[in-house]
Image (cartoon, rainbow, N blue to C red):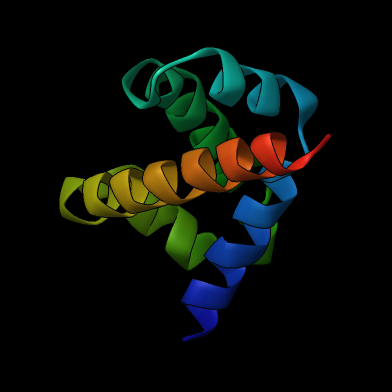
Length: 88
């Protein structure tokens, strides 16, 4: 549960990044995925000191990284796009 909260905090932080937001608005989900996955990896590395275990798991285990990345990609992409549509 703690790991899920840590990942969630990292993702919400990433959604505030203007370049990530621009990429989501300007691209399909597939193309946004290239930008998002690189940003997600960077978030894990940047905050490794806060939770080394989850960072190591994310970086070293494809069975963990791929489904997590895909789920978060879809979630972040849809949230950003919905927010952009909702803004006047």
